[in-house]
Length: 260
Ligand SMILES: C[S@@+](CC[C@H](N)C(=O)[O-])C[C@H]1O[C@@H](n2cnc3c(N)ncnc32)[C@H](O)[C@@H]1O
Image (cartoon, rainbow, N blue to C red; front, side, top):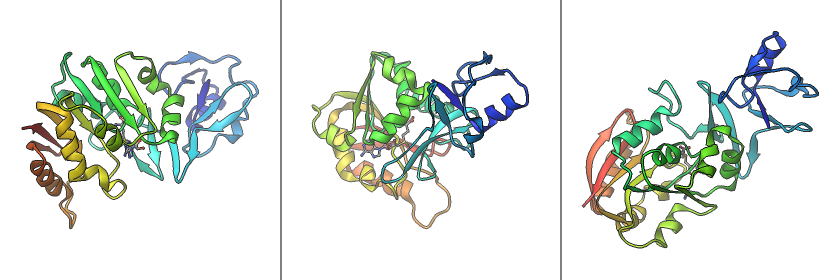
């Protein structure tokens, strides 16, 4: 599969031949790879895929527009124009996941639950430290994006990662035994899009499936001066559900809590 963006096509038409055809993972000397590709159809800030016969936008419409787009040289997932990755204050798209993993002090013996898989960047980063990572994704469209994304490849190849597809993390958690996990990465869509992922019901169940002293990272979103203090509300709810809030992290826009 060859992946193209408008930027790559422009470089090619300008005569550049050392180009990346896999969304920046590697650079190749392009010879006749782009023969037959309708390059004039590569438009806007979409990512396109070419399989030798057909060119298509890496995008799916499923109750909303799911698509890949490039951000600082790496693909990100957008749902209805909303970025599913925190890039503000990070030079590289993957730095957020690396910092989450560092903040949670992941070690080999950890059993990690990544509640919201997306493109799997947090799950992949976690699997580089921990023995087992379970990652859950509700949307079939997102799973398709991850399968197309060259940067998500490890998600499907690493034996340490188990993907629970097309299931809500709420349902997955309800079916799991007490005390199974030692670390949780909870990186949900923003509060206005997925209120149930910020609920006491979820926090109680998360606590139940975690061992005592397990650590949780919960992305909450901007701590900007809004009328509603969602960070404060989340912290309060977590404390009501068996979690001790250790820190509110402004750069990660989230909360670190310990199971008590
Ligand atoms: C912010 S993104 C996660 C990004 C991910 N951590 C990564 O590194 O690519 C949130 C994801 O949660 C998914 N999602 C929404 N509701 C969900 C639910 N109830 N259970 C599991 N996943 C859900 C969305 O489809 C989206 O892919």
